[in-house]
Length: 311
Image 1 (cartoon, rainbow, N blue to C red):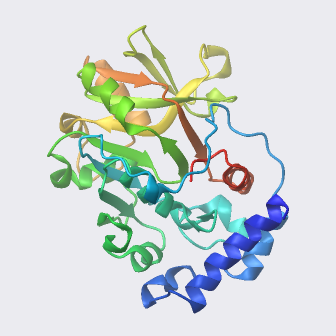
Image 2: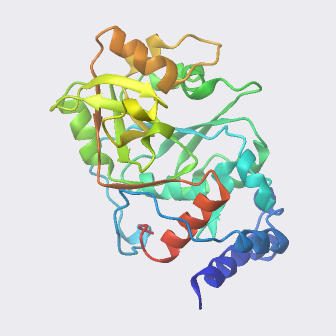
């Protein structure tokens, strides 16, 4: 079976499961991923150069590879994005509900981090929130605990985290953008963060177009010296950029004002640097791929099908 066709069959099987088998009313959230939409997706299944810094993994069943070596931390998944660019495919769902390899992207997040000992998740919701809550419920069917934060008005990456401050004051917590397909080993990332007594640690990845993201300049220990959001191409001296994956200490919440739109890259990190707060960054061995456009989504599907993403 050809790769593109296999993607269609997997996604179709996903939809048929929702409609006919092993289905409860909870799963009605994804019924609008019908065959016509999947065919539309196939038509957009074009060849696009893969994002750099993708680690090659052999496929492994997560249920047979449970690991609990990391001290438990809570994870905040930023899931409130509108997914505007994906609507050209007819995918009228939140970005975290787009199917990769026959299951929602968000389910991949739960499975991957649950196997590393992370079982408590907070999600901020805005666009079509019922399509997430109806499908996942409280998370028990997936072996996790989910707390939802509904945002009637978007609060930004940091503002959304601040809204759930009371849930995050217990210790180190993980924040990551839910519209990235991620395969990151948490233990070395957490070790790096704690060994340096960092207030915040940013995971970096190599980009062929670093001017499109947040560029961080660091010293030899990984301490961030400068953070520039989407800088001019002529000012760039590194291809390492912000991946949207952070380890944070509760004290970082003090740098975020309550009840207003606030962003980590544009607001929080520059503020921490100006105050001399220990902000660090590292480039982990990881697969990190944004699925926010039809082309990038198609690439993620191919990577998954071709075994470049640990299953």
